[in-house]
Length: 393
Image 1 (cartoon, rainbow, N blue to C red):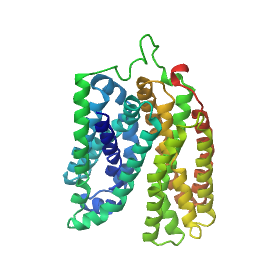
Image 2: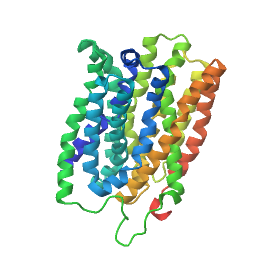
Image 3: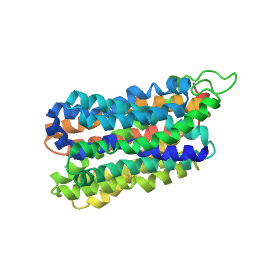
Image 4: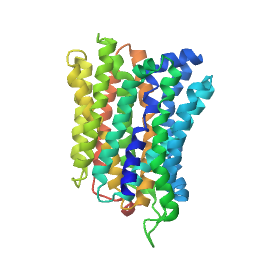
């Protein structure tokens, strides 16, 4: 069954971002088709992080009741239904509700992927996290790059262009059905309960490592959302064409495919992940500094540096698996880190937009993002120490 779990892991990862990144390229058509206001469209862009925080916190309880395989299976089904239905709801409210259904499926699956890796591949946390992160990066970049040409190939209707991604989620349901059936036949230890016989309950909020990891996760998420949402506009305002600005963003995202595999492999071989955290943060600082000083002239260098910096995400996922000694610890740590982290990441992109609007330029927003790399490095170094939350809480 390990091969089925591995296939399920890859297929699930491919589905955890297309519901979000397929929407951006077609947002204009969606707004016109549904009569959606700019305010509603703005709400739509902030909903993913809010849903990840709200629904992710429920994942441990659901996994404890039905098993992580069954919950991931239900999550894939929710993504399939939400993505398939939302283009045909006929109004903004229906579109938003169906999006929330898909995002709920993504949220619980986000939290449980590190748990599945820790449970099924305890001796290969780094490589398997790398495989998962690489598939997630691939799904993210594919949906962003392929949605518009695929929409044109399907006849130009934005509804089909968005709904077609549901097919990938349907395929992902199949291996998780097998995993869920196996869990019912052989439940094994309860996920999310104590780490073992006689073990004390894990008090996640009393763990300094858990808080440090949550802050690190939230700040790297802020940087990633700002990169995806605002980097093309920074380049366009510097005189780069719209097409080239899109290419530069695609390069930043595509770099995550190979690097997301390498980063967990490196992290799992270090007792302390602080040096990796520092390197990624310094790359981010250098990239933001370049964007401020010479955005157009050095654009290729800046997007490469930002692509490296964004690999803080697979590093954070790897540390979630390494900072707990049991599957029970990982599920609690994953839920806590991702829920708190996504809440931390919500204001960043909005604040960048406000600073840009009120200052009339990119100097202040870019300075803020470069400055946020400092607490990101500090939190990451603290989270990277060789500790277990079971020993702290």
